[in-house]
Image (tube, rainbow, N blue to C red; front, side, top):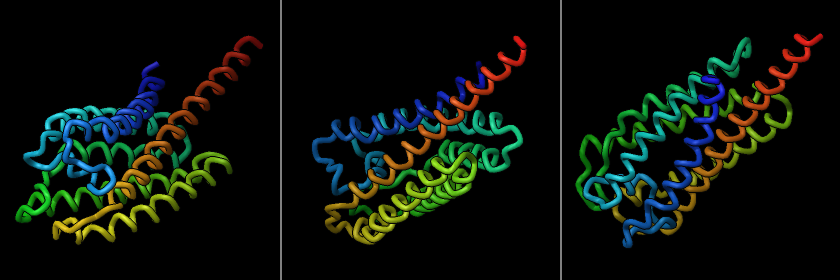
Amino acid sequence: MAAKLSLVCGILSALLYLAMIVFVPMLDPGYSSASQTVSELSAIGTPTRPLWVGLGTVYTLLMVVFGWGVFTSAGHNRALRAVGGLILAHGLIGLYWPPMHVRGAALTLTDTLHIVWSIATALVMTLAIGIGAVAFGRRFRVYSIATLGVLVVSGALAGMDGPRVAANLPTPWVGIWQRISIVALMLWLVVLAMSLLSARRRTGLTESETARA
């Protein structure tokens, strides 16, 4: 039961984060989901920061539990163990997230560290998807490769606006590119969790049939 609940945490974490990027911006009438980055919801001094940080902490803890659940459910599947370890690392990194300032403010060390944290977590999850592509069958592999393609394209488009964000220039599409990446990643996590839950259910049924025989 504990292993099953830990996998359910993966679904809950993804749904929570998707809800965060939809509903938290509503607290700031001046925020634009299309032209501003998700990180700007947690910027110092913004009305959305307290709620974002609080919900983000819950999301991070759910990810830690999910990563552990994936790792312990992997059995002899080395690729899946690696995926679990990477998701766990992603969660642990997110336990502390250096705060950034609003656009136009002078850059500080925490702003730089915020960028470093963002790049590190993106690389960790990209690696997790790449390794996870071989954890299950062909359908999951094709889906994982397609997800990577979406992440690379949308991430590159968002990254091109990075200097404009720092310079406080208009970025009419950066929020859209970021949210495409986030939705693709969260859906992949949900599919991974559901695949593992399905595999556990099939294993349980097989063991039950063997016991009756």
